[in-house]
Image (cartoon, rainbow, N blue to C red; front, side, top):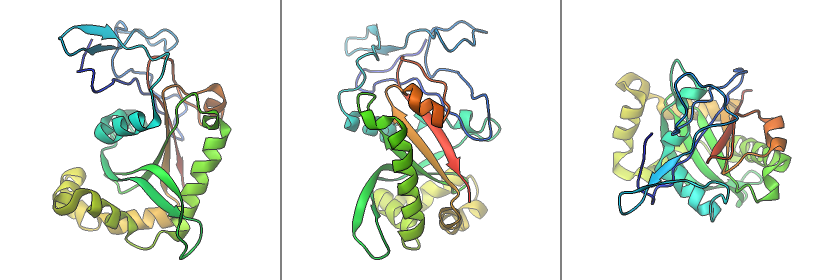
Length: 239
């Protein structure tokens, strides 16, 4: 059992990535016994309060606002379980920007915005949309919405847009941050060129984040999820 101060709500995450058919079901925090792989009855998640006590995190009521979920992901990208997406080479993340505008046509002003844009150490852009489970759009509608965002970003973001956004977010420390993310100077040298190439070719990862993932969304982008916290479903667009 692990614990953390209550100001950082803890989240159970579960991800899946094509072509993996059986994603890992390991929780971020639980009292599940070793060897228990049944995701239907996970143990509770606990958070530490200001007085040093621990209390079960009640996820049944979800999160108060989408902004709370968005901040949680921005502040703690480790919740995007990179080890479940690629166990042999767990994904590492760089936040490119929040509420990033996407135009509806070439040279047009922004028509939509995506909640988060991350990029992993292989320079694969990752678009994240956050919804509360109480939002009816979290069902099939959100899938089409995010695919439309990705398609328009691919077509209408200008060259070097990802690097520009990242420099606005990270200022003078971006180069050092990318070097640390990549792990070598060679990989960091052409990082943004590879990011642009991935975007133009449609090699973009989409992640949907919610306090609970409804069955309708699981049927479109399969995910192991439950009611104990944050459910994450991810899929990857190629070509």
